[in-house]
Amino acid sequence: MKKTSIQDIAAALALSRNTVSKALSGDDIVAPETRKLVVKTALEMGYPRIKITFPENYEDTGFRQKTNSILLLCNRYPSGFWSRIIMGISDIINANRDNLMLHIVSHDEEEYCTIPSELKDSVDGVIFLSVFNKNYTDAICSCNKPVVFLDAPVDYSIYLKKGDIIVTEGYSTTKEITLKLISQGLQRLCFIGDITYCKSIRDRYDGFMAALELARIKPDRRIHFTSHTINNYYNIDEVMSAINKLDYIPDAIVCANDDIAKDVYQIFRRSNIKIPQDIAVTGFDNSEAAELLEPALTTVAVHNHTIGTRLAEALYSRFRTPDKPYEMVNISSDVMFRASSEKYMDTQKLGY
Image (cartoon, rainbow, N blue to C red; front, side, top):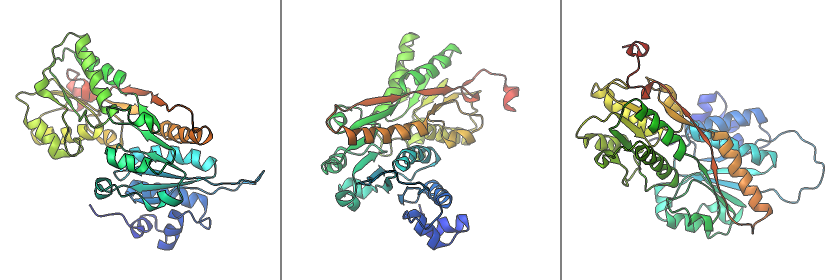
């Protein structure tokens, strides 16, 4: 995939390259509203290094001794889903008149534990937006900066010795979705998601299994695709590989996230398998991908902006009281039932 350049952003916004460059570097010469537009566009286009600080007009009421610099680390280019979390973080950072920087960690940087150069000198705190391998996480934490994690490995006790953890609640919402599927008479239920990758995915699977147990349905583990994959099923080939292993078409597929569900839609469309008439499908995250799918995808709405503000607030709390016990906070989520999970609904409503 071609990396986004400053010129690409400038062309998209009909601004000069110089203006975009200054906006991304945090130069006060660029008007705050223009900076907000440039940063938002850069996030959506996947620009890897951004100083996300929006200068505002204010009067100092006292002497400020120090400005903090916060570093965000993630392992993929932020989509609209992730940019809303980042903007939530930036709201808190800006309110404190501090600096916020985004760094996209490449595969090689993670593999060889290459620490961002700015972390050694100018960074006061770190927010992890992705779950990285243990060696890379240890390398970042060895710099002795306060850290906050969005999500954690399945064995999250390791992270709780290093920093605070913010997690989206997924156990009860996935359980609710699964019970709704069962209430329609669906019993052959498939799950797709790498439960070895992170706590949030494991929680969703545990909620799925709890619903089966409550309904006294014996799970068919042949159609539970939960083992580790290189891309954690964030790859249509890996999803296709799982689908190809099915001996029969299940009644429903509960996907660990909307990205997996999107690929399931595409695969079934090629095979002329109709959703939800032939099979019900659900996702998680209520991402922009879910908004574009037809029929509309049953999913779980995540409070992105709240998650972002909570991540930043946890870091500031750590600045104030560095020796307090580390915490893990669950942020609630909400099921959004839509047409994709109504296998036996009136097909006329779906336009068939």
